[in-house]
Picture (cartoon, rainbow, N blue to C red):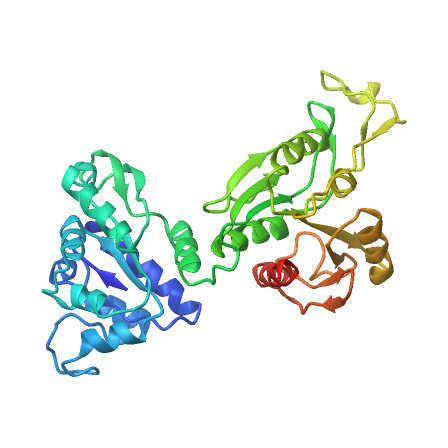
Length: 388
């Protein structure tokens, strides 16, 4: 983690702390200018490693720190990257430990610009950023907003939740590069009146994890989501819908050029036959409700599936998982189905973990109980094997 001179340097303390908690081995390199904004002691305490500031200091790496740090790194992150440091990197300078380490590494180098908006938009800075991108540096576009100097504009360091997704992508294998994924997630809501609706307990967490992990592995991802409390995954094109009919329209319009469609949404099977335009008063509620059947999106996708497209379904079952999964796989012409056991607290709706049974035409595999991100990667591994 390389810090240059910017007021945003204090934010990197959170980054280092979180990475260390995730069991990353973090080594911090600071320029002299960075030390003016935050002390090395802070990063030493958070990373549990010595902080490197001088090119020729005698310490853990003796006089070869720039070589050893660059050699050992899986990823080099320059954050915040000042206009001065960006100019040095673009010019191939090696006048401090930070820039020399970058020259000596074969690891991916990520650059997070953070500076005054006028400095960021300056033609020289923009030309230097384009040069870095052309050289293979991964430059993450800064946020817009109020600066420390009270000016408004682009140049803010991204929030950690965004930054860590870009870091995860830089460190992920790119076995889905060039593939277009369409993923659905969450529940649908079928309106009774403006205040009431029929729905289910789906949180959308599994679908969002699949979209997020596919993007990390290089795919272009479109996520069609019903109502959830989740933030849009970084880098993913999101289409938000409410009802099953809206989800049907969105899926059909985006599936024509998809290489993989993953239907992880819990779409309502039925909707009220009649929707009231105004809230129905309690004493006027009819205790019987007529229902109309919603379109079966997965069935229609299977019936019209192109040979080169992979279609993946999900099934929420409470018993006979294998039998019900095989029935749905065949009936809906799927290439793969993931069966959830919703009778278990740790693998059903609203859980942060999952344990699914994967079934394709030739095999069955019980995945372990793990996080939904890890489950998503295991499912994506299976999809990669089906492409092969």
